[in-house]
Length: 182
Image (cartoon, rainbow, N blue to C red; front, side, top):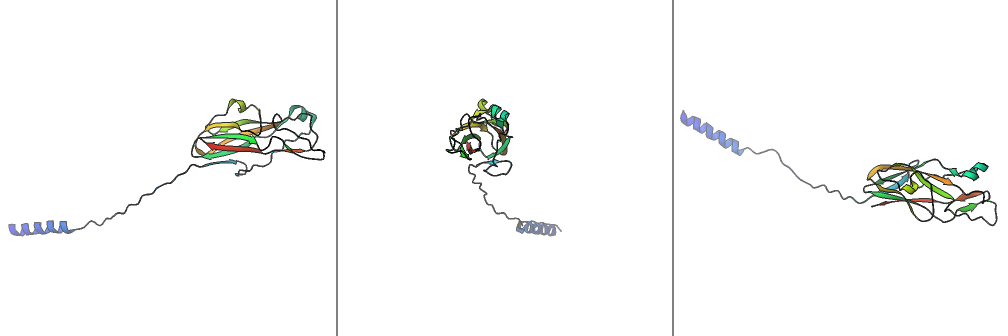
């Protein structure tokens, strides 16, 4: 009887050592190749070209006090800290109207900008923080040290104050916003 128990025990041990594990595995690396990315767009249409902002002068008081725009909202998406600058594409407005020769209006000291809202995590330089500062063809920093993210918004307002020196017509200049990673 002892021999039968030893034989059964030996068969059990042998059977257990011959069983194979039914699991297997394969490994693959997933590598993310991230690059620096930044984008600036207008909130109202989601593109880099904003709708035309018209500042209409209809009364004598408009000429005496200047005219302000409604807030214009922009959004920056960046994976690094960033700055935003604003400038005009020309030193002078382009004139369309009936005067001949065409009047020449400087942008500087006639068109102004201020930052009225900032949700970028960065700061607004004191010169444009709810204070109008003249626009010109050279860059003016309006947001500094913005934080990385996909929905960093800010708003600006324009003020035009050409006084009584210029005849009726349409005076146009492009304002260019540039977002740059730090």
